[in-house]
Length: 242
Image 1 (cartoon, rainbow, N blue to C red):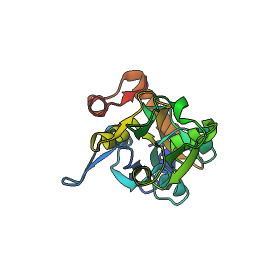
Image 2 (cartoon, rainbow, N blue to C red; image 1 turned 135 degrees about the vertical axis):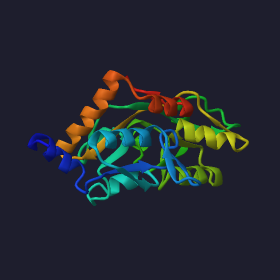
Image 3 (cartoon, one colour; image 1 turned 180 degrees about the vertical axis):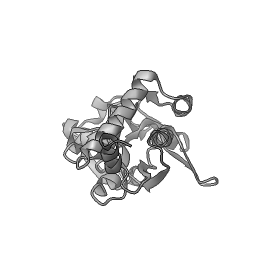
Image 4 (cartoon, helix red, strand yellow; image 1 turned 30 degrees about the vertical axis):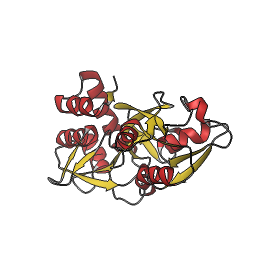
């Protein structure tokens, strides 16, 4: 292996294998089968294909939210992380081009008059939102009237919404639709307030590693994603980037 390849590879996988951080709350991109112990979905499949390209194995490091991944960026727990790109994160992370696009939207009670994001952004309205999620960062910049009520995880946000007097909860469309379909009296707004750019991120302290990640995603975008990635995307209603 030449020095120009060995240096960034060592920066990317200092342990000799790839540690991939995944957010289990993002069910559009990551699923875990507790019976088999297998991770499924677009993100785990990309991690496997990237590790094959690097010539090493992959181990998944599980977190309950994007915020918990970000909190550990300097703790040497993971090498790459599947996270949404956002300007507020650029001081700590280098992002690949987007490999997938997912929608951020709102779930409301069926009886309420809310139909659009503009309807919900009103005085007196409270929206349950996972702290430091991509949609939290966006809503913090965008909301003019409604108030954000923070939670630690997406599941907690939905629990707060159900049990409290709040008016809506924000999240990834697939998760909110699953929530609403399992309960009576809730519906998901058809209009997304945000299209979330899902990327593979590395710490800003490892720019050489960031180049390897960028090259991998750019190659997939140019040549097309594998059949396995396409299958997982279609199964979960995920739009792959192009």
